[in-house]
Image 1 (tube, rainbow, N blue to C red):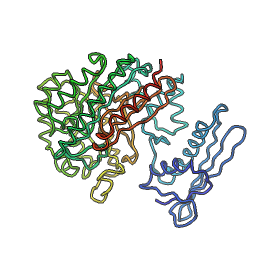
Image 2 (tube, one colour):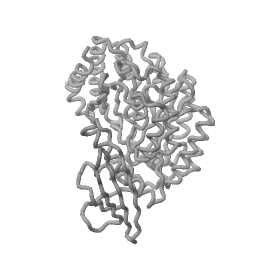
Image 3 (cartoon, rainbow, N blue to C red):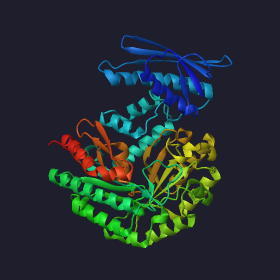
Image 4 (cartoon, rainbow, N blue to C red):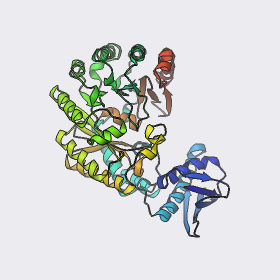
Length: 498
């Protein structure tokens, strides 16, 4: 969809306009000179007595016109980026309103296009706003539906039950360990994940660097007396490496990290069932790690083949029962709404199969066309469901989880997510993932170690975030892991000055 924009010269407003447009149209193109466009949007601005007034017009090729107006009192003390944000939100409000009128599509998330809506809820709560004021703000300022406001409230309440001291954990850290190998790469994936076959040399070199990072980071944390809240082994698929390599890695963790026995949660993604063996589960048991992920994504064999997952549905079920029989008592499973070739019937079947296993937690993702994925590069090959079907599938997931005793405990959103929906983690009582809450709500520093691991350093006082990423390919990581470790410790030194 090509849209001609009139009345906006400031380039800082282009991105919010593009993001709002993308909620309604695939691959919105904004142009700022008159020419060949399908729609024309014009905006008039007035600033008087500390308020901003914006009127928007949307004109179609056949002469129809849609209008909306919004006046917003700007808070007097706001300057710079904070003031600009209020003007952007006002513009987004007007633009969303006229596009909803034109298309007849109502956006349940309103003008919120960010990844972490519940983080904003927490921020307002921590600033002292009442629940009523927060809900009014989301509905009146951001145009959220009652449904999404209630979903956020439910999640925030649950998080505070699971982690009552959530607001005071900024002086602790969590650790993410990235292991960038998988049996094969899925078509929708953009994580650092390399097919492990034929790369044993890379794996060995990588693990050497990972052990080094564990030692150095662990030494620094011990020296400063900083606790670890959670540890999460992700990737890739951390169970792609051998049982012996896993054993040495967890031994390093126990030797290097401070007070390991009091870490609240240690998770190992075993997402690909074809990587799970009795020997690897023995290793997990040896080191008292019982929270794992075994991810079917779908219980339709044709779908698994289409997305490049080289395991069978039967293997998923078999490995789940193996893990259960060996004492794994906190298993997460993932399903994805909107996989190629799947509609409501297929997704309902996957839900019914999930009911036979009843994992402790179930994360329901909505397919997102990530820019660098195989699926996005070859969209013509992958037929996905309509917006209406996607919405129905999400409704069925909500009903199913409620009926089976699961409650939502975290959510996040992504660009290019089908139906402008969300990814939601559901858990049985007492089985919520603390790490998932910490990574989404950004209440503490997450130190990323390993190939492709991203660190988010959260200032314990100001909550300002510094991002730092290790390289995504094993060779670059192997060449520079000492340097990247040193850089992270420098950042930590600044953040945790005592």
